[in-house]
Length: 142
Image (cartoon, rainbow, N blue to C red; front, side, top):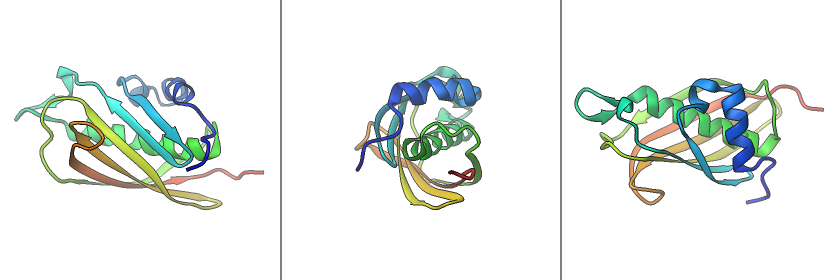
């Protein structure tokens, strides 16, 4: 894993400025390498849906922001990189608590970046609750 083009602090600041809905959820980037990001989302009561589980839209927003962070870790601050596809498989019901997301690049091409995110409860080595794959459109680079 090489040196990332952005730090965790820079990713958090850019997320708040460029992606305010997800950037203001409280997601913390805790580990950033080139093409690799680990983030946490502290528990909030309003993330819970009926049945006592974390709502799907919360998990999808976190996964999308982490995938965005993976792309930024490779390219640096590119404002026009956008999601073109996001697929999520919910594997088990997450209990209320902190979520951890581990994202990594699968392929970075000239126009598309493809990655995956594992969402876990109980920390980085915890229970896998959802698996996400996604594609980002990458603007032309010089």
